[in-house]
Length: 163
Image (cartoon, rainbow, N blue to C red; front, top):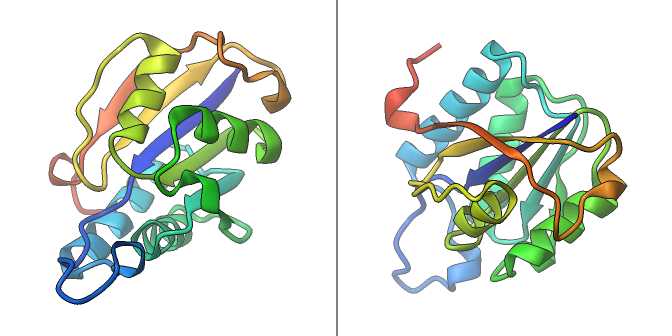
């Protein structure tokens, strides 16, 4: 059994004169990413691998959350997750997954569609939200288009206590 954590990037600055791909997090986004990382650590869900879209806001979310969660290792940037379809997320996890827990940080609508595809459970994901999916596989390489997991919950930054 493996655990996939699917996270939507935290709140970013508006587009004013900045390309969408290059928008950084705003202050709230940095606080929310930190809060979510702390929540993962408190739940005993320290990711073994962290994958992030190449967009600035997703990378920043991943790094801040990973540091707060106590991740031992760098965030791996996956360009295919920016504007990628759910299959791009599954492919990235299959290729780079290791250990028991993988965190993937990306964008809507793809993150919602990944969770729905794997669990048949539709869940709206606000910025900074993390969905937890249990997968009935022994190795990440087994993750495929027909893998059916279980939706174990969703954390939203506004619902997570400050740790």
